[in-house]
Length: 299
Image 1 (cartoon, rainbow, N blue to C red):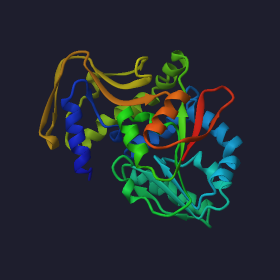
Image 2: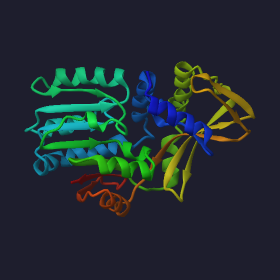
Image 3: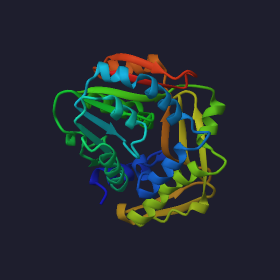
C-alpha cells in the first residue's frame, strides 16, 4: 500500500500547473526491470561513465572513508556499488535502500550470496521521507549513485542533503551537449518511453485511474534555464482522467504536459554551492576521462 504522504503528493501534483507525478510511480517491479534495461542502452552513457570512475577511484574512496557500513540510496540492481563493496575492506554491513520492495529484496539476496561475510540489511522505503529508518553508527558511507539525485528538484535536493549526517558519495551527470542528452532519453528502441509510461500503468492499477496511453505522446526535452531534462507525456487531445482513489477528475487540454521525472545535470560550482548550503563540504571530485560524469565525496 502506498503511503498517505505519497497519495497526497500525487493529488497535489495532478492538481498543479504544470501537472506532474512523483517519480516514485516509475519504480514498481516492472518499472525497476525497465530501468535496468535503460541502463544497458548504448545511448545511456551514465552507468558506464560512473563505472569507469569507480574502477579508478574506489581504492582512494576506501582510504578516505574506511566505512563499516555502506548505505546505497536508490539501490536498484546494486551494480556499480559492487566496486565499492570490493574496495571497502573494513566493511561489515551493506544497506540497500530502494522504493521497490521486490527489486531491493531480490538484489539483496544476490549480494548476500556473493558477499557471505557481509551483513546485508535491505530497506524498502522512499529515501525522501524515510531516512530515519537508516541504522545508526559511526563510520558510515552513504552512496547515491547513477545521478539519482538529479531526479530531485533543487528544493528537494537541499532537503535531502541536509538530512545526511554521514559521509556522502554522489554520482552526478554533468552538463553537456544537448544532442547527447536528447539521445540518452529518447532511445530508438523506445525502452525509456516504456519506462516512463509504466508510471501511468501503476496509477491505473493502484489508484483505479483511467489514464489511456493512446491519448498521450512521450516527450523528453531539455530545459536550458533549469539545466535539466524534463521527461513526461503530452496530451494528444482534450480529455478527462478519473483517479477514484484520490477523489479526482483531471481535465487535460490538448498539448498539456504531464511531467513524470526530471534529470538535472550539474557543474562542480553548482554542486559545491548546494553542498555548502546544506552544511556539507566537497572533499573530493573525480570525473571520467570524457568529463561526462562525476563522483563527489562530501562530509
